[in-house]
Image 1 (cartoon, one colour):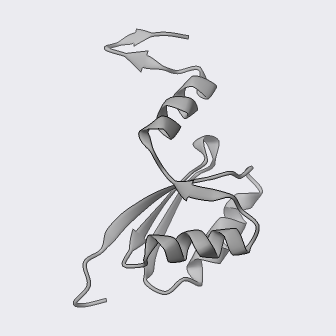
Image 2 (tube, one colour; image 1 turned 180 degrees about the horizontal axis):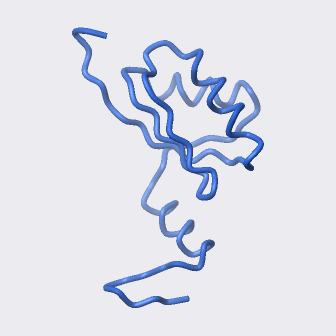
Length: 93
């Protein structure tokens, strides 16, 4: 789309591997989304395009998925759950 700046929106979406297809299908219908990246193992979805974050969240919730904006706290919890928390090259788990 010309005239619009493309940006990325990171979200935490509670899902299992089966939901990845549902996430992609749901977001493919939202106007302005150019690309969807899903990292199901850490429940992270990165949406690139010129769609409004609230519109993206609303679409995901409409199909029964729990979604919220991604935060650094989510990153820490994902690393802890995966057992790969590292700080300055020291592994804590």
